[in-house]
Image (cartoon, rainbow, N blue to C red; front, side, top):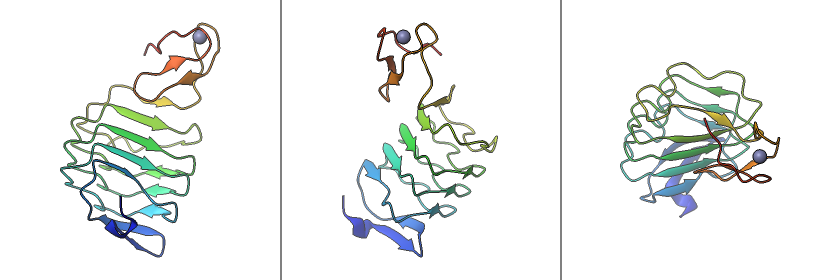
Length: 145
Ligand SMILES: [Zn+2]
């Protein structure tokens, strides 16, 4: 992954020109602009760092191969249509402090549930670990949604 593939102006990510399937957005980014990464047909996974506060309208719209997104603790707003039509998107890891997600942010995706990173096991209170299939670190039960 080359940092040069990211188009960043004054802390705003305006685009990604690389061809990687897995990207980590650079930590200098505070905001992901509207349509910044839309229609990327390579992306499978995106890690959004703690520095990012806002994910703009349609920022990842029509990324048809996107499966997983990890969102950092700094996020305040996920705007409408941010992940619209990402039909393979089934895993989104959210920080607990996010208070508002636009109802259309995940429209027409594969997401059935959104869970928060520090949710506790209903059986024993242990912490869940793992992104794809979270498992209780104490009793080893898989998280059941
Ligand atoms: Zn447990």
